[in-house]
Length: 406
Image 1 (cartoon, helix red, strand yellow):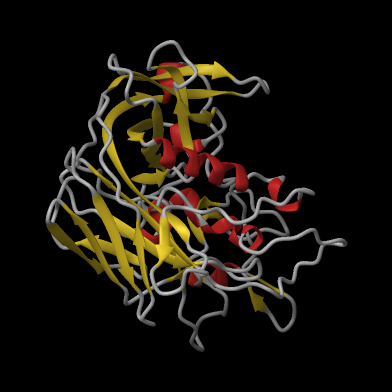
Image 2: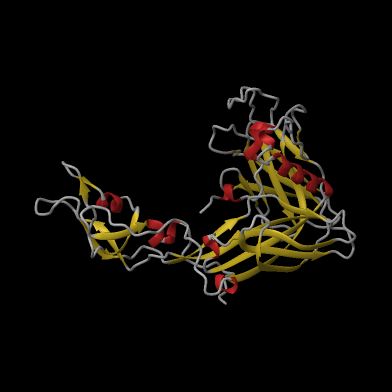
């Protein structure tokens, strides 16, 4: 499963090596000699009573694996005469010591001091009004590109006309069933003088997971505005499309959609961020430049800071559906990996090199059955990749508290 740092919904860092320092480079080279690490601040506090969260990382170059957490910082939010202190949990993830909810008509400010003594502060932000999700539904659709799947649609309406800017996040949870689970497994036979090398044997399987529950989080910027419409109504807006070939809808599926009402400034920031992170913007003739948010350095006015401190009202709604609700009598989508049983040989070569026992020892396969029609280049057992007979690597054994059956 994903770590807390990788679970945050809006990733600022994937494009930063390009947008932070830019220029027309011809021919294009993958070395950025002028790269300078910059702090990245991601923070949205809401009107939900909860422990709020702030994410601190640093920009990274293309050849690096990903963003570097900014640890050991002092993080605070001030508002309404109260200071809320945040403590670091996972690296770069700061959680408020106490649960709190943003209040109307109150200004909030984010304050950050890093371990090297640099300090940063945000603009004063206030809470927009809250607008409910009126309807959340799933429909089987065909996209403009001819792809069949399930669309998740949301409706919302603010009769006062004050909400206007909406951003969406989702958490999806789904039942996973390993298609080749059996109550038996294989183990390597210990070698001694009385036994042959490379042998395996069938044993009871007490560890593999047949049915589990996987969870994924949205990782894209999903937002819409009603500013050009005659009324403040979100109508039939698709927040998620799931291809009919995606295994996550094979059995039972649930999605929790959160609707954030944003300020104009926040909406424009995320809209620009989304444009910057488009596939073509990296190498287009007109480079995007630096994306300025509402967080600045207090110690160096020339320091570039990427980030946005947002105060947003949020509402949420959940739905469930089963695959057969939309695809009655149809074959299930392909599993997460191909699951064709095969029969690896016990060994090959002279001196012999163990094949099947090495797979078993490294936990790469799961037992399916004896290979009754064993051919000359086959072993005595049929096996599949581990995930096909044991879904523990992609799912949790215990259903979440909100899970309900149909």
